[in-house]
Length: 152
Image (tube, rainbow, N blue to C red; front, top):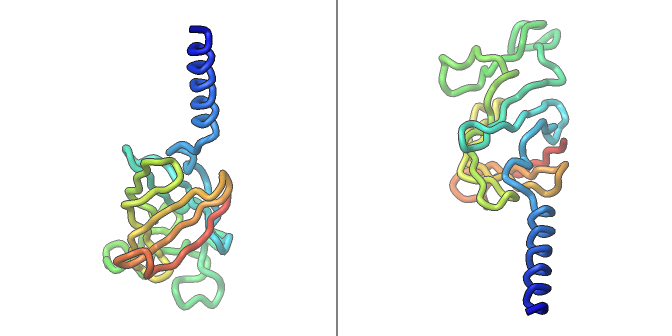
């Protein structure tokens, strides 16, 4: 009987240690720098899914001599395919939408919007470490796409 109690205790201890070291679904939450480090994206919960919005830009306003917008005014989503959304500011723009996770390491099923070209892609996000997130945007299947690494 004593041996059974020791085995059960050891099993519970191992399962607790493994679950404490495992990533959780909410480990993705927080502020991430894009690969170019010219934008910060906040990943947050949107219902039972995960979304992300731009909260900071290195150059939030159009620079002098800009052909994309009036110099000194906030950058807007001028590449959006929907003309009614082209005046929306880039800061505050949701670019990561409706991701879900089952294992706390990979999020899928959502879309990623790229305001630089106005296109929306299917997406997959993988938490490489607590400070590194791999984001893959693709059309059709993940083989045809592009990856970026975001850092905290």
